[in-house]
Length: 151
Image (tube, rainbow, N blue to C red; front, side, top):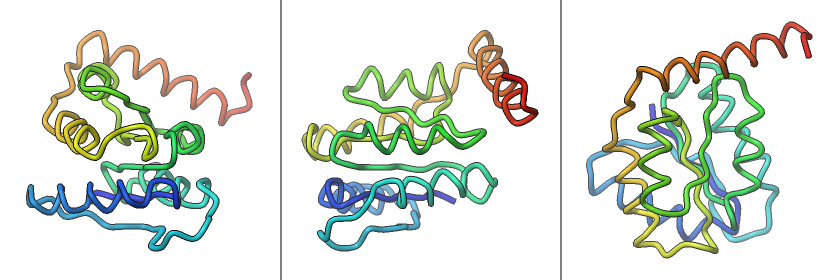
């Protein structure tokens, strides 16, 4: 399953991304927000990140004004690798080297065209594995140590 969510600052971009994904034939579940009223980004970032951490979804997109807040929230969840991307190269590397399962965008700092292009790059890029998997394994070990109380 593929998820998307935004706060009010990311809502217009989220709607454009939803149209882009639909045009590509990708089914996505929208977890809100659904209007321009001011909301707290942690509420929506948590929905997507929690579902991915629990294995209820494979991929997600989060959009807030800058993308920073959503990135912070999402990366609190074990197994989540949320990558804030700002250009084509970071979109590619977020998948190729980091196997990001959430892409985060800034609705107030990127053009809609750039955002859709970056989402497409992220979707179409394959994870390289190899030495990059070893690095992800180290991140997973850190998460396990933190859950076990080993700081």
